[in-house]
Each structure stands twice: as C-alpha cells, then as structure tokens.
Image (cartoon, rainbow, N blue to C red; front, side, top):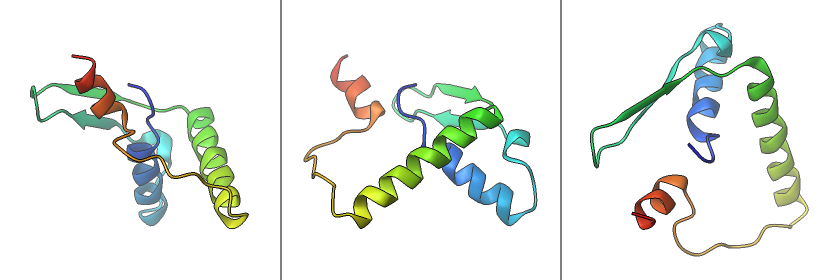
Length: 83
C-alpha cells in the first residue's frame, strides 16, 4: 500500500474523540478507479510509528526544515503512473 499514514491518523483521531482504542478499528481504502478495496488493521506498534513520524514532521516544520515537492507524491498517483 505504500505510505499509509493518512487513514490511520484519521482513525487515531476518531478513536481518541470517541474513547476507543485505535487497535479496535479496521481501515478500508476504496479505490474509485477500479472499485477495489483494501482492508487492514494496524497493530499498536504501527500506530506508535505513525505518531513518531508525525512528531518528526512537525518538529522539522517548526525548525523551518521542509522542502517543497511539486507534483503528486501520494502512493495512489505513483501506482496509477506505473500502469
């Protein structure tokens, strides 16, 4: 699936908002182009890695260390471009 931070990060926010554990959630990606779905569960160590990565990104932004990357950088666009 490539970079899978976005949906689990949203799930973690929903879990916190509703007093649930992120590990209780199931994440499903729906691909509109071909109608396929990919469902997964994340272990607590995956959630911890996502938190650490987001914290590192925020710290880099606070230090002014971020580089623009023009164009689409998401895994879905890269997947479509490769055929």
